[in-house]
Image (cartoon, rainbow, N blue to C red):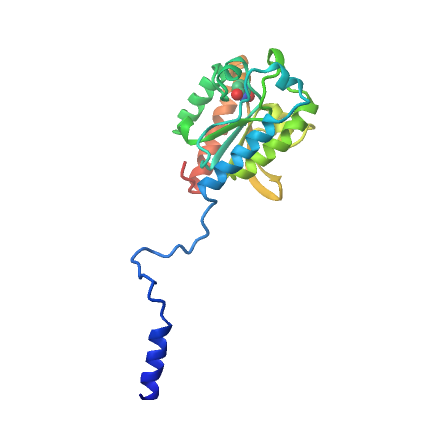
Length: 229
Ligand code: URA
C-alpha cells in the first residue's frame, strides 16, 4: 500500500458510517428557545402565582387571569389588571376595554390572536379599583419573569399601572406616551412604548387621537425592524 492509499484508507475508516448527508440547510443561526421549554416556564410561573397566599386581591377574586394570545409573539401588551368579565372568564381584556383593544390592533392590521397579552396584577382588584403600589410591586416580580419568558421584540405598556410597574411611579403618562424607551428587565433591554389604556379611552374618547398616533408609531417600528407578527 502506498502512502497515499494508506492515508485514504485511514480517512475512509474515520468516517462515521451512520452519518447521513442531507440536502437540508445546516441551522447556523441560534434558534429561539424550544416551544416546550417556553410552555414549561409559563406553567411554572402560573403555579408560582397560584401559590400566592398573602394577597387580598387573590382572596376576593374568582379566577387567576394569566394571559391570552400567542406566546411566540414578538409583540407583548401589558395592561393593568382583570375586571369583572376577565375574572369570570380567566382571560385578560375580555370586556369593553378588550373590545376596544381588538379594534385598536385591527386598525394597524394586527389580529389579537397574534399578540401576547397580560396584566400587571393577575387577580381582579375589588370594584375594579386601581391596584395599590404594594400590589403593583408584589406582582411586578411575576410580570418581569413573564416578560423574560416571552422575550418580545416590542413591549406595549398600556396605562399608568403598567407604566408604574415597568418604568416607575414618578412619571406622567401624558408626557411619556408615544416615546420609545429601553426598559431593562433581568439584564435584558426591551424596546418599549407607553400608550393610553383602552379603558381610559372609553372614558376620554377625545384622547383617541393620541392613541392613534402611538399605534401608527408602533406599526412603523414593526415595519422598520421587519418584525413578523
Ligand atoms: N383592563 C386591563 O388592564 N386588563 C384587563 O384584562 C381588562 C381590563
